[in-house]
Image (cartoon, rainbow, N blue to C red; front, side, top):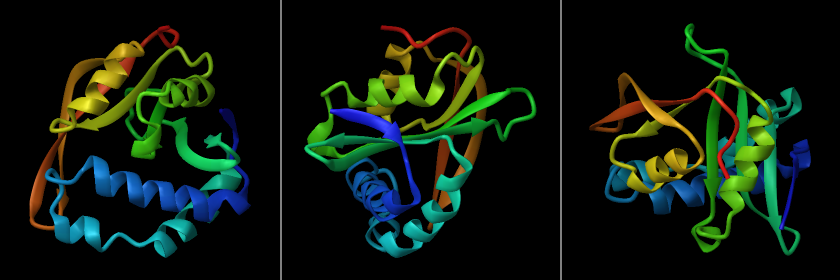
Length: 161
């Protein structure tokens, strides 16, 4: 297992992990019509634009990208740093890869937030294991016809072991 900074040529693989992991992790939470219409091509374009700015890490198993994390300046005025995403293919769940991606993406940042769907107990448990706690801030997002509640988690010290 290797974790390294992403390069632009990783964009198609990152996009594929992004789409495939959403289609597994959010089935039953986000409408199937939304999940089934996710586009690897559109996500590739997005990641080709994001990767050069830095803050995108990839995890490899047997030289194949099986996960990624993205972090950087917070979109919230009251937080300095944000973990935008950690996604790992379901075949790599439980391997410690998410933890390694979190360590790489977050480094020594002392104050970090991450937004998590309320109906995503797997992700919520993961973030709690690495030292995040809900801070009481919520928002609602729409995905097709569905309204999804997101909870903000915050970590104010190093990643837990």
